[in-house]
Structure formats: C-alpha cells, structure tokens
Image (cartoon, rainbow, N blue to C red; front, side, top):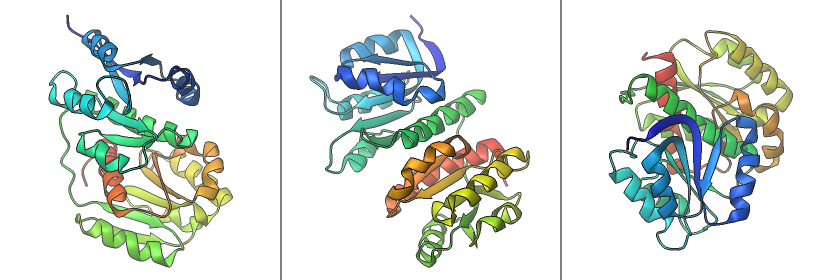
Length: 268
C-alpha cells in the first residue's frame, strides 16, 4: 500500500503518555495536526500508511531506541526525506549523537515552548518548499549575511565562522540600521536580542511587511533571560540560538537557514 503524504502533519514517537498529551498543546499555536505512537513498532505501522511532514523522535524507549530507528528511517528510500528531530532529556552529547544517527535536528524535551515551535516550523516550511520542486536539492553557494549586534565579541566571532564556509558578513550595531542595511543579495539576517525588544519588534514587523524582505530568513541570538519574550515575536523569525554560542551548532543551523533563503529568495 502506498503511503499518503501529508506535509503539514507531525508524528511524535514517544513512550511517555504524559509527553504525548502535552506536546500537541505546546505546538498548538502552529495549527499543525500532531499524531503520536508509543514505540518504534507502531511508528513503522503508521509510516506504512501515512507520510507526515516531520517526525519528532524520542531516544529512550523500550525495545528499539530512537538513535537506531533514526538510522533505519534515513536508510529507507520511502522515509529518508522526512525530517527527523530527536527529542531527549539525555545530557551526554545528545546533539552530537543525534546528528551521528543521521537526524536532521535535536531538541531537549525541556526546551522553551516558543523555541520548539520555531524549530518545528522551520523544518515544516523547508519540507513544503522542497515538495514544490519534488525534493530536488538546492546548491547553496557563498552567501551574504547581515549581522545586527553591538557586541564586539559576536562581531569578531560570527563573521570568522561564516567565512570558513565562504560566506561574507556585514555588521550593523543598532536596530534602526537594520532595515536600510538589508540588500537584495542577503540570504540571512542574524539579530541579537540585546539590541532591545521594543526596537526589534518594530524592525521585524517592518521587514515582514515589505515584499522585498518578507522572505528573508531571520536568526535570533537569545540570552536565557530573553526566552520568555520570544512568544511576542516567534512568528516573525525562523530560528533561535541561545548564548553562549557553539561553533558546531551555529554551522548546523546556518545550513538550514541558508537553504531556506535560497529556496525562498532564489540564488544570488
């Protein structure tokens, strides 16, 4: 039987009944259907009939664990294109182990709800864009990035990291300089929340209302003290990184955001 492709649907695989009940509530603002199964055996049965747009996969489960099952999903031509986000409370190298298992992404279960929604929405958006071109890959070349921060350490750290992959970075230091600083060549805006919440909200609204910048991917750099403020702007941004930044994580997130930029805005 051929499976039905439903790009807006999310499948949760988790053995904890409480988490299966809570996760649809945490993601509710996305307006996406969430279905859940308690183990890998039932996940296999589900995926034989339906093809969701995203799989949220627990690591610690009876029988086959999430890392093993993720490798199985990515080795199967029928399911390898479905994004898989690992969810776990494991502390030891959970991010690295998830990527080694060929997962597309990783999130701790205790992640802030707004960050979870932003990350899930990013992968669903990319799934929708890929579907429009039958999943064809996009060749991401050297890209132009605008970095908005007053932090001298971030002004030194991030452009040097981006340059390692051939990307060029321009810097503005005030929120008021962002809108005029964006060019048609830019494929990503990296925005430091330390620039001020009120100013940032105004700039984000201006960018999203302008047809020329409405599709520009926006990455927020967020301190833990700003997490509770995210709900006010979460649907105007595409991803979040919290400080202190990690070079490996930065590079992983950049890959998805630049794909989003190239698929939305086209090649430079």
